Image 1: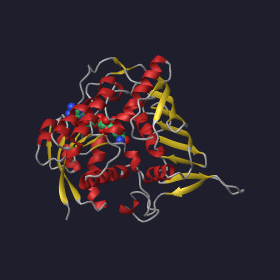
Image 2 (image 1 turned 45 degrees about the vertical axis):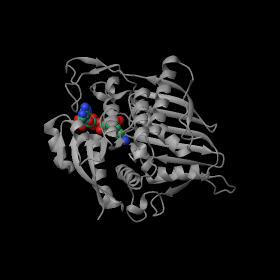
Image 3 (image 1 turned 90 degrees about the vertical axis):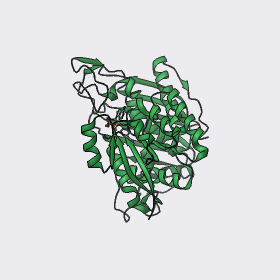
Length: 392
Ligand SMILES: NC(=O)c1ccc[n+]([C@@H]2O[C@H](COP(=O)([O-])OP(=O)(O)OC[C@H]3O[C@@H](n4cnc5c(N)ncnc54)[C@H](O)[C@@H]3O)[C@@H](O)[C@H]2O)c1
């Protein structure tokens, strides 16, 4: 029987559901010494919050997130709210000595991300952990991709080609929710989708993005205002409001190892629902991934012969990352399993007082790239990214 670790989750909607499922299931899948107790969930509206608490398996609920942070039965604070609340909540939790899992992007600005990373550094000597929720690192295929690339299988990286494509904004009648308001979300497709592929580029290559040149666009500049969405500040509910974030972001990046990277993040890729595709070309081979086939890697290793070509690697073997906790070979995993794997890594880091990634330094590194992209797009020039020191 493992030791109890109390979880307090702030946010009960999309990520709230995904994280609840992860905390509920992780100790049943992996042999962790720490066993999460779903102590308390928070949100701002009592009715839907109470329903969510019952449905998602939480013992208690509160509309006061500060009360959640202060509770003795909470050891981990999971911040799954829009970006405007990340810094305040995560810093309060760290200062109260709680471990923090914070959704991505880490913050809405570099200044906030710096303050969060600083707070995490201050409490790290006492074993307090802080992680940012770039869950795609936890898909077995992408974790294996990182191991192969960092291990040198395809040699020095020449190209990274990363796209993250959605289409939920193509209808101009789609309302002005929090994701379209800069004060709440920080940025649009850039911080939402672009942050994931920036993190993946860093994770898989083990290199930083050292400079960028970018183009951002907001195709639909006004949208119907909504009364209230998920407890976020009410707008008038009448007429049209301004969209204050990007709908799409395209940018070039230089990798610290000398390679080139291209990134595209958009909510206007008609027909594409959650199309994350990633390809790397190295001096000795190439590697490809498509989220619509999340258990597979395409691998090309240069060699002679008429049968040379890309081969499909099914990443479901027991010695592939994370797979041993799950099912026999070929019994495929999906998007939601990445959150369970994320919770497992978090618990192991707490349990062993071990290193954890992506930590708030990684979150800050991504935030710096996001900010450089915005500066580049507005000033129409190349912008250097301050090095994080994490990767070469
Ligand atoms: N890792 C991923 O793949 C992924 C996917 C989607 C969203 N996200 C990130 O997760 C976070 C939440 O996004 P979401 O899609 O779950 O949003 P959502 O709108 O579905 O849910 C937001 C939740 O936050 C709560 N909330 C808002 N302000 C609050 C406050 N002041 N106090 C307490 N609760 C508050 C709302 O009540 C709601 O339950 C964002 O940072 C987003 O970027 C990550």
